[in-house]
Amino acid sequence: MKSESIVFAVAGMCFGVILGWVIGVQQVGNRAAAPVATAPAAGQTGARQAPPLDEARVQSLMTIIKNDPKNAGAVVQLANTYFDAEQYAEAIKWYEEGLVLDPKNPDVSTDLGISYYYTGQTDRALKQFEHSLSINPRHTKTMLNQGIVLAFGKQDMAGAEAKWKQVIELAPDSPEAQAARRGLEGITAAGHPGASTTPGS
Image 1 (cartoon, helix red, strand yellow):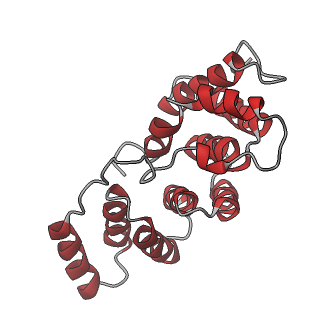
Image 2 (cartoon, one colour):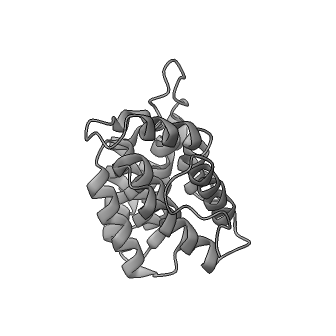
């Protein structure tokens, strides 16, 4: 998780293969057995190695937290450090703690939802995204990630399309909108029913 937006940890992995994935799902028809595993997730890319954990940073942040247990910033930074190393179970632990300390932070809530998704907890991820939107109904990072999880975790391309269009309507010039357009282009190119050739219209 880098400073700009955690969304790219998801979007960067997903949008590069969305077209092929949608086509693959269509080719197997509406079988319930269409595998979720065809959606790539961080840490599940074959021989690719996860980034190393910054142990020095972990120790430094743990010292801060030990001396100041209510330091929400340090707790979230620790969660981010584990997320960057693709150690999502540990990231979840600290994002959850971060939300206890800062319950109105939609970024932390959404980061937690993404971590749930990467540990195979699709429904829990979607529920967490809904919580993020209860904090900030215009949080486009959450909406973009909702679309990604709907597409790859639920094979719900219509739901993903609706979320991505909402991102474009709310923030047409944002990086999230650029990613949403790429997702919509993938759906359209694959011939998904109801896909629009004019994203955001």
